[in-house]
Amino acid sequence: MLDLEVVKQKQQQTWATGDFAVIGWNTVYPGELLCEAVDLRAGHKILDVAAGSGNVALSAARRNCEAVGIDYVPALIERARLRAEAEGLPAKFEVADCEQIPFADESFDRVLSLYGSMFAPDQEKAARELIRVCRRGGLIGMGNWTPDGFWGQTFALVGRYLPPPTGVRPPPEWGTEKRLIELFGEATSSMHSARRSALFRFRDNQHWIDVFGTWFGPIMRVRENLDDGGYAEFLTELNGILDRFNQSDDDTLLVSADYLEVVIVK
Image (tube, rainbow, N blue to C red; front, side, top):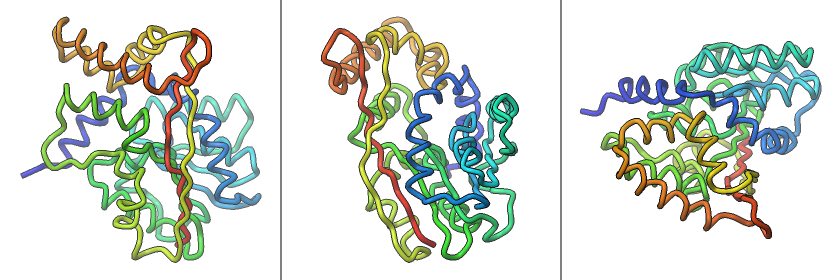
C-alpha cells in the first residue's frame, strides 16, 4: 500500500537539496501576474501556499495586503523572512505543509499557490486545504505547469530516470482543466483559466544545466542516483527538451515554459 507520508518526506528532502531560492528568481514575474489576476485589494488577507522563498507573498505585501506564506522547507522560509526584512515588507512566513495548512476555515480573502500545491503527493488533500482556508466568495489563484510544456516534459524525463512510487499522480495534471474540475469543481462557483508562459533566460543550454544541476533538487537527485553513463544519457535528452522549447533568435537560451493560470471563486 502506498504510504504518502513516506513519499512526502522524500519529496521534502529533494526540495531542500540545493537552494530553490536561486531557481525561484526566475518566477517573480508570474507571481506578479497572479496577484493581478485575483484582483488584490489593500487590506486583503492573503495566503501564499508552498511559497518557496516568498515571491507571491512579497508581491501581495507590496500591494498593502496582509500576506502570509507557508512552505515545508525551513531554509526557504528563512530566506523569505530575510527578503521581507530587506524590503521592509510586513509579510509573515511560517514552516507548514500545504496538506495541513495551520489556519482556521475561511481565514483568507485570497489563497494563492504558484507552482506549489501541485507537487503535493496527496492531490485531493492539498486541494481541500486550499478550499478550506479560503472564505466563501473569496478567490483561489494558482499557476500550474502544463503536462505538454517545458516543465511538464522535464519532470516526465526526470520520472523516467527516477521513477516515482506507483500510484503518485503526476504534478502537471494540475495544469489541465480536467484535473482541476475533479479537484475543485464541487466546491467552487466558477473557474477561469488562461494559458501563460514563464520565460527562463540563460546564456546557453550548458549554463541552464550548470545552474539547475547545482541548485535545483530534482536535477541534483538525478545526478546523485545515476552513474556517469546514465547521467550522460539523461543530459542528452534534457538538451533535446531545452532545444525544443528555446525561443531565442540568437545563440542564447530563452526557454518558454507554459503554465495554466487559474482563478477559482469559492
